[in-house]
Image 1 (cartoon, rainbow, N blue to C red):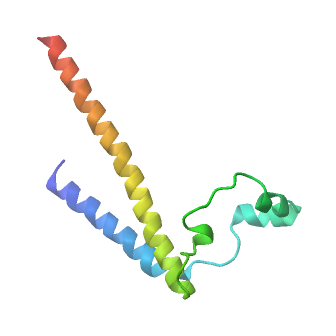
Image 2 (image 1 turned 135 degrees about the vertical axis):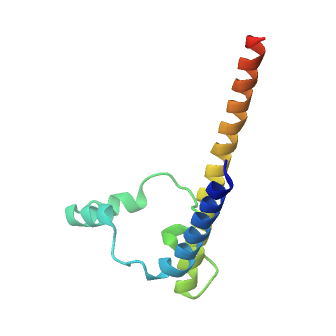
Amino acid sequence: MEKRDIKFIVWMIVVSFVVALFLSPFASSYPDGLEKVAEKFGFIEKAEGAGVNLNFPIPDYLFPGIKNELWQTALAGFFGVLIVLAIFGIFYGIYKITSQNKSREEETTKE
């Protein structure tokens, strides 16, 4: 990977954190499209109580334990970016390991 590609990736990560921290508190509090349809057709009550009983780390994009709602949303965005980066890093690491193993196998079969 070239140096300019690494710089670009680092800048995009920084921009993601800036957007998550400083712009996410200003996101609309209105329901998203799926919630709006569920309200319109009257099945939102079924969806709220149903499903798997999981404890999500950041429910409703509000970070628990903090009283200021703007900071709750900003921290939820920040940790959301961290979670996505961690998942990407895991899959990227798996890809790199498997591609290295595959290239080693090809080299040994050529010899």
